[in-house]
Amino acid sequence: MSDFHNDELIRRLERLGNLKPTPEATRTAVERVRLALLQARVTKLSSRRKIMLKRFAVAAAVLLGVGTLFAWLLPSPSSARTALAEVQAAMQSSHSVTCRQVTRIKGEPDESVRMLILGNGLWRTEGSDGSYTIMDIGKHRVLLVNSQKREATLVQGWNTPQVNLYEHVKNLPNDTSAKALPGKKLNGKEVLGFVVKMAGSGPVGSPPDLTVWADAKTRLPVRIEVEGKDDGKAGEIIVDDFVFDKELDAKLFAFKPPAGYKLETEGVAELPAAPADPQLKDLVVTPLVGIGPVKFGMSRPEVERLLGKPDGVQELGKNGYVDMNYGSRGYFIGVNKVYGVAMISCVSQVEMAVRVRDFSGKTDKGITLGASTADIIRAYGEPDSKKTNMDSSFLDYRKLDAHFSLFSDKLVHMMFNRPRPTK
Image (tube, rainbow, N blue to C red; front, side, top):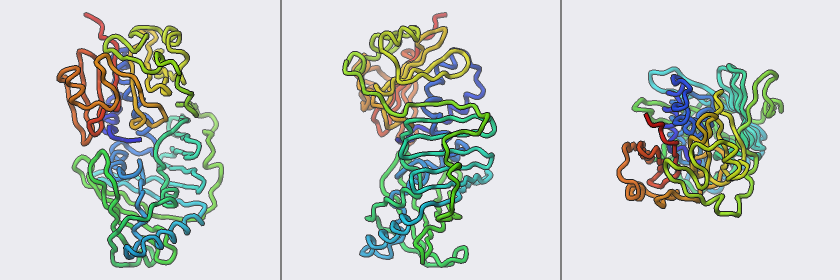
């Protein structure tokens, strides 16, 4: 999954707190909420620190995406494979690790989370306010617990990369070079220091350099440092306070919220098979009209009669708005109790936090996922608004109530709203 447009989504999320839940506000905001909701709260960090984390880790994963991290232990290119094998063997023999992650942005208070990681693909993050997140990589599920609101959300079908430092380290490639730093003592330990260039590129530009310090004897990490900027402000992330092989209570990783907490479930554990009938899958979306046989204004029962049962249905708010999940076909339909079908969203896996299939249909002008900005403009003319954020672009056509999101000039998401009422 990519976080290419998370900055924009989180910015819009923050605005929602001041909106009254009118039908008009709901229909234009719900989809952005749904897309950003999961990414924005996984680590229980503030939105700006969350964005900063992702800017630092774009080369591999949402958080400590360190696909080449432990290449820092390479004293010379010729000994790379041997050194990495020693590191991986040491990590394989450890059944747990805990560490602290501190995010610092100039002029703002530090923010710290604690991570507890088991070797079987389970991990937990704990915020300072008592809220926590549990992830099971193997079963693609996440439990988000908000202690302040006494609420919990179970997300099934989670599709993020492995944001687990321990699992990344155990499965690293060993073909990356690193620049050695003079050894020194850190927290009473003799350590080896390296600057590692993270390979690859991401939606926010060139990947950062990591400064990593490792115990010279055990070959286990002691401290990881990375610097960058967030909206022009200098900042850094420090991961330290590593403890290996500490016994961790299994209850800490239980997918069951505390007693008395309200639990909501989102997503589906497994995607159902896509329908064989192309008339139910490869649909044509027409702005201001609808998708396939479904028209704006139709009721939920009418949608189900025409398209069949959705993968799931989620109620959003208290005004009868539901999000009908047809993610196994690549689209979602928002239905308002009063106004009927109000929103149609055609998605791709690259932008989604949960597993979906890419939308295989097209618009009335022949636009499909993967289209370029030029393709869309040729089809629909110049947009009323065009915004660019790093490698992401957002085209808005107000008269059509159509919105296109692109990453690296490839269309990854289309959203269409019902026509505005005539005055």
